[in-house]
Figure: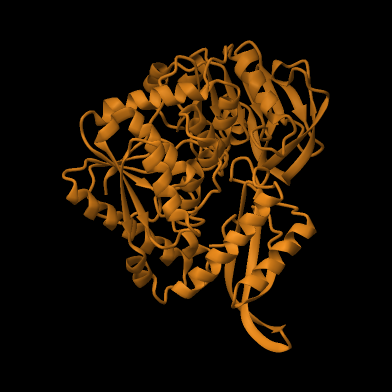
Length: 520
């Protein structure tokens, strides 16, 4: 398996985030960046010498699933506390600071999960400009019973007397709740206070810095070697392609694999955009028959993803051999893809074809993923910085496996044609209603359920189609969209009247979590 190259910034002013396997680690990084300060995530056991080399303005310890008093719980070198670098511990991070500096951490008699009212000491620089109470997200089973020497209490709840602590002279702080999530009211302001009031950052980082540094890094990494970019036409792969084109020009070749699983007219639209608007080497491979043959009689969504991921790579390899030696494979992987595909420490929610779906023995020296640490909204900002037209930057997100995972059950050409037409009608009516900018993702799903209907006094027994629309900022969580009933009615009437084999329409009113945005 080729190694993966991840692009990191070289900013002078940065916040280091030490990861204790917390589920919100990248959200913390994202919130810091929203404060115009660059953040970088490193493992909790990063050597002190490396931390000194990074020279951060501040350090944040993430939450995590462990208990500090358990054997093999993640620990740090206590020399970290002597570096005179401000530290903020969140959840497990607060408990770790307490445990290592002589306080006491115990299992709570009553666990706290969900939004909780927290009483704050707003004289603390961490809570500057806050009132005395704030709604915050708590997710913990342990709690700090006794504070370490030199610390004072700055927050509490009815069940957790020590929900926040501070040692102002050493600039070390701990909070039991999560300021990085939307459930915590004005949580980003707490992070802003830490970054500016406590760490003394000036806030000179912006997305253009990411573009400049990434282009520079790609030039240094790839040089005069050749790279192949997996271009789907979606915002992620498009931004990755333009970044690479800016860095290495004609040494980049983009392969657009039309697997026949795209939305209506999408293949032609992608080809037109990149051939007319960009001076990029583009090869379009029409491989519908090949993919459908591989997917024949396959119903399991994970198998679909694995099959499509492997077939993608095989097509790339074949095309690469036609153009000579290619050293790098470029992919538009973003961070939510990585999280959902799992890791050695996390659970796989679903494999993404460009992450968990990669086969063994890929014939490239290295896989380059310049967007791997970004969320979707950050990718869009990067695209705008690169001058990519808004209509492409804000194009509807579309999964790499395409309509194969929007068809429940086996994939056939007949089902594809039905879904393409239904999805087109849904998107068309959403655009006519002026909702295409306010809804973050919307699409149709062809279920494997058939039900009885009646048309023209005749009995029908046809497919049920599901409509899905969500509102989200980061695609890690999402709320189902409250589309007006009259618009849903127009969509339903059009689909049933214009498309054969569908006689029932349902609307998905489930948020993420518990559901994922895609059905498979």
